[in-house]
Length: 250
Ligand code: SF4
Ligand code: SF4
Image (cartoon, rainbow, N blue to C red; front, side, top):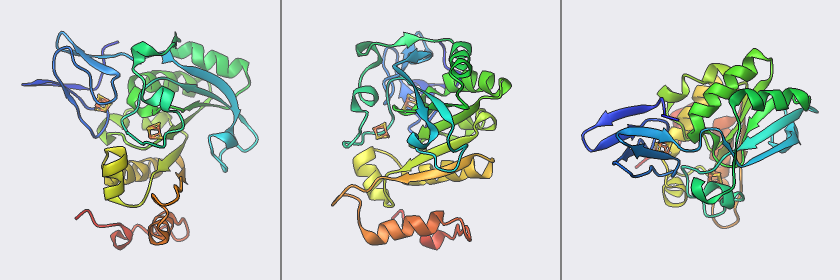
């Protein structure tokens, strides 16, 4: 399917889904390997390509304060826009879409399975879901109309202008903050930490129920000061967004 999130430029076509903003030359793919320039159009290779489907307790996503005790239909595809060496779903996140067995599912079919399995929500998870924004947009809209909730389990690396077309359908998100150090993000994830913080705040400000996961990796991101800084920044009572608690970008 042709991606909705594109901009034609001199050297190729820009994918505007995430902050990488890849400018993709003819015949090439973006960083996540799921968007390809074919004849001057960005084709979304992962649209509808489901790599895993499972019914999970919502607490396994993990969301502790969103419809506790309910079931979520978890679905995933292939690819990621980060490069975390510790990735637990490496086989899905770092594979090329051509190399992994997937099954095509129409957005309506996902919602039908969720209803049949008595799931309160659909969780977009395992690999990074927000690179698959075209598909989430279509599926989440059907789910919304059927009163099925939409849940993201995400690294939060999304472009706000693109995501603004989808946010109204998203009910909850678990955003995985990888650390509280911009250099750490650059080195291990190949990403800009501040974009993750911006997107997380954008979700919160647009009525998405947000919970944060902070995976502590011994000797890598376990500096007590950094963890304390993250906790202070996300403290809900009072919610203090003072920039003095943000690490410097310098
Ligand atoms: S989703 Fe992000 S990483 Fe993938 S092609 Fe688009 S801008 Fe690049
Ligand atoms: S963001 Fe998540 S899915 Fe992507 S590489 Fe990192 S841990 Fe894996």
